[in-house]
Length: 236
Image (cartoon, rainbow, N blue to C red):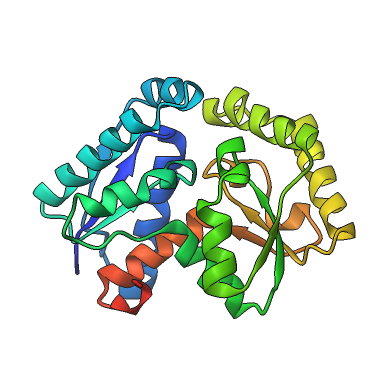
């Protein structure tokens, strides 16, 4: 079994979910007392959040690259970034390590393509919804069209993530808002929805909506296990 390197702390609640999914998947596949070989470099989310909203991506690139190098130095065989938004730093991470980096958009694109879905709604932070790092990969590599909510609804999605979900708060009214936004996307041709923030699955489950949900956290974590158990074809 190979060692998975995790960059966590954004938020720690979502990092906990990654750890849980990875170990559950290893036990499911191998049985018995098996658990994952892994190491985590956890950052202070207060520092990250401040730099995000200052738009200081040079500083964020350095933090993420340094974290990845620390994981490589800790003998990790792969780096997994336990957040969607910070994949904006993925190129800088890859330039600074010699081990594979598992991109969340690649893992997610493969899963959506398996379901033969061609158009999806993307929910996440404003950074994730408005930047191209996820949408571009899905379009160019998998021919999947990605739509996002209107400006007002993007603000709602983003606010709920930062004001509630990253603090572990699950509010019924917020769930209703997400359900409304997802239902509106169906009218615009969405065949599925990407839950493109590691905290969103804390609020929205498959049973809550009428189209397939693609939980990037679970997809990403389970893809890391595939790699760790020698199924290396998942890395492009």
